Length: 196
Image (tube, rainbow, N blue to C red):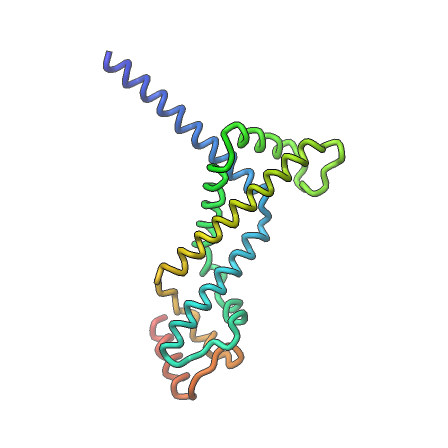
């Protein structure tokens, strides 16, 4: 009797995990189809600006000022924001999982799989699908807004010291940062080069 119960419990647990995985796969697919990659690229730019603020605070302690925040952020390697962009994707999917019912996820994923790649050029005969995609797009946009806010707050509050390996090159650019004098500039750049 105990073995039958264990086998039944294992089968129920296994089917529950498969359903959960299928649900998450549907949510990932929906986000992939509805949320353009350019949105995540803009998020990467946003996180780079936030990192520029973290570096500004760190450099201010040495009397160095970032005079061009956007320029500084553009010089940061894109990989610096990889963790935040990955976390953002995960959180958008997580918000979608809570926003859509199982039935809605299945129906929306099925509909999106049946439509052409370019969702903006649907023929007029696809009115119902277009309405569904529009509704889902608004919901995914809300999920994105919640997710980017959460990831941004987490980055602000982390207190984590960002990598400095690429700072010497950025600090050489007088249009990006200003130093109180040449001696401070040379010593700070030498200090960061030692950390490489």
